[in-house]
Image (cartoon, rainbow, N blue to C red; front, side, top):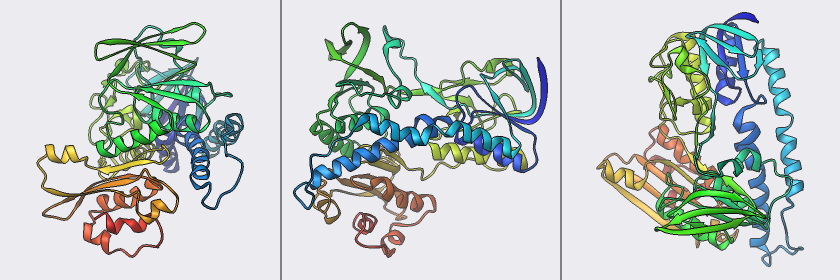
Length: 450
């Protein structure tokens, strides 16, 4: 075994870890970075980026079908799954080598393997022992252990993105982002989808009224969404049999593939954090407002590996990485501010939100006015023949601050960013309404939402 010393060791090569490593190395620190998986992290390899490639093609197929007879005349457009996955790999396959090369060029020492703490400031990776003044944990998240019989028969979202062929019947466990996004893509590729969700509302972090409208569109696609349905076990015969209970009744679903979409937890439990005196739970490393471990001052955490209260999103991971690097280099001086962080479900059409939900505002006793409309008759929806669109905007009565914005429909994923800027910079509704925006665009609809 060999022992090497560094100023900083980063665990994880995704957005958060890379930001910390590059920024500290640029300041002259001796930096090492470790990953047990191919370098690049979840977003670039098995999350946002490859998923959006699939969604983009599904959007094109959907758009062509909507516009048939309205200026488009062609053979029925269909999604070729095998070709799409080959196209997706042109984005993901080069990432590990390119990312490692970039680290080496920057003078960051790369290590492959699972890191395990052997002391407050030391860890082992294979036969290498690393000592460091500081350690940044940015190991990301992994699918939750469901602890049901047959759980090993599930495939994860990682594996779904690598399927060379798409089965005819697919069942998704859980009613979150992963299940809805993949079900919408699969439906456009001709698969029959089923989503089982144990709660009364899927996509629980989004506006209930807009989720209801998206559920209607999802059903129109042929995807069956079963609510109040809890999976109790999975078995494999000629096909998969998923055993579930709904309202005290037992049900069995036959399918060709079962996909885990029932939540993720921080991927930190096997790092031997207790050996380093680092407190953690399923949300990640317990940190203070500076993203520093509450129990080991030499350790910081960022992204999905930190129990910081921030949403598990790639932009948040990148932001966390910058905060950690700043506090390492300059002393604890920057705190996190997750105000105005937008979130999107990349269904077709997309569902987006930023700020407070209506129910949350009511619970907080905030005095607000609300503007809520179905926009399927608006020009911006009619010109692309999209009947599934709407919005809800919350504005504080006394201050005119925008408290929350919730959008469903074409380019909701882009327009939500304007509301995010307004909330983060404390623009008033009047400020946004008075902005002169390009027309005709979806962004120009904003003045009618306020």
